[in-house]
Image (tube, rainbow over all chains, first blue to last red; front, side):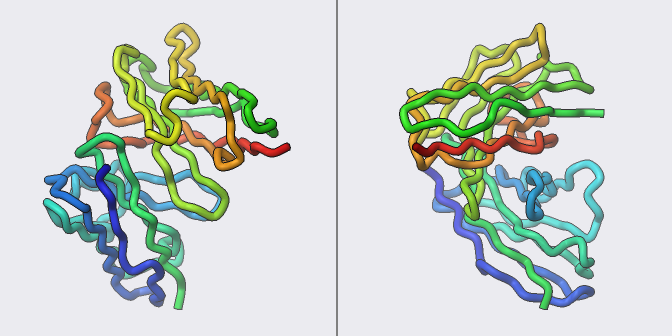
Length: 107
Length: 123
């Protein structure tokens, strides 16, 4: 099983700042990584697929990068609506796995 | 627009069974793979199962293999998950999700999601 590790567990920032979230895979997964945003009481929302492709309707302030084992989700100029939990997910090997999540909170 | 409407959750005793349903609309049902994902209270996301567009291929997480069965009814545009031999640790919100394409290893697990249905396993 491919294990995903996310850091930090919690990130405290202010609106307008840049957020950098990391996801590390236990083995190389090429570009097979997605990022999801989840707010309390809601289903996850796809942000990024295949490491750097924005999903439909996702603002350009969200960007993904990385390959192999190390990936980054960057959110530029944080807006109040961006404070949520973010999960990475790999599809390179079975079973599909998610990271434990990074909670992005308002400072 | 794409919609996934979930039903079937509830309270069930350990060892019991439950069938979850996910009725879809707004897209060509038999052109997409479909997934189930769950989230225990206060915990992260756990992928459970996937079924291909033509139902020929299914995969399961080890934690549910042999106990849960994913299926699809193309005549009703509905995805199902049969949960059996339920354990207290199966207590969670269960989400259905439509992938971005037909194959089980599609670039996107969930371009669209249901709102979730809560399953509570307790005596």
